[in-house]
Length: 384
Image (cartoon, rainbow, N blue to C red; front, side, top):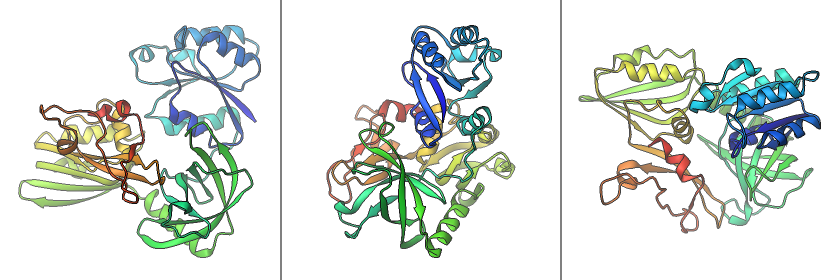
C-alpha cells in the first residue's frame, strides 16, 4: 500500500478525499502545519500533496523545508493550485507537478499512477445518483431503500448509505437506468467501506457478481450513450430567439465553430449537457466570447456538474445569464435523493428585488416532508 500525505489549511477539498478513497492500494494521511507535515513524512510516505497554504506557512516555504529535510530521500511534491493569488505567484520549480484545482482534477489519478507505480483506473465511472434497493421488500417501500450510488462503472459501484453493512456482504441490487424502465437485478459484494467522506452516511464499494447477460448489455449501452457520447446540439428557431439544446460531454476534439454563427437571442438548454472536460474549458469561453452579434445568452436547466464548474472557474459564465439550474436535495426521513430545478427569478429573488443565495424549499415526492439541501449553500450558490 502506498502512502500519500496531504497538507492543506484550513481543510482539503472534499473531492480530493473522496477520489483517493476509491482505491484500496492508497492510504491518505492529513496534515495542516509544517511540523505536522514533516513528522508525517518522516514516518514513511511515497508522495506529498500540498495546498497553497498551511496553518503556519505557504506552499513555497513548505516545499523548500521538505526538500532540505529529505535530501537523501526525496518525495514527489504535487501542488494543487486553487487559483488564489498566492498560489499563482508560486514558482513551479519548487514542485514536481502543479495541478489547477478543480479544473484539472481529472489529471490527478494519472499523475498518482505515474509517481506511485500503481495501476490507473481502466474502467470509467460516471457520477450518477441512482436509487438502489435491496432485498425482497417492494422497491417503493422506504424499508427497501439501501442508498444512492456515488458513481457506477461496468464492474461495480459506490453507494452512499446509512445502513449497517460489512465488508464481504453480498447484496441483491435492483435499479433502473435512464431510458430503460425495466428494473435490473444483480448481486454486488462489499469490498470497501469509507465512513468519513460522506459522514454520517457511509460510502460502500460494491463489485458486481453474477451479472445476467441482460444487465451486461444494459450497462454497456448506458455507458456508450452517457459517457462515450461527444457533445451534440439541436437548434430550434423561434423568431429572433434560438433554442440550442446541448447534450453529451464537451471535450477538446469537439468543433464548436458552427455555433459561432448564431444571432439574435440564444437559450442554451443544458439538462443533458454532462460536463465540460478540463481541457476544453477554453473552447467554451471562446464560443461565448465569439457571439458578439447576439443580443442575449441565457443558460437554462444547468446540471449540477456545470454549476460546480461555474463556481470554481470565475469566468465560465461571462456574458451569460443563468435562468435555471439543478441543485441536490435529500429527504432525511426516507433517504430519497432528488435533483431539484431552481428558477433564479422565481425562487431566489426576494421582495426587495435582490437575489438571495439560499436554497428554496422542496417537498419530498414520497413522504411530503421538506427536503434538506445536500451541499453547502455558500459554496454551491457562489456562481450567482
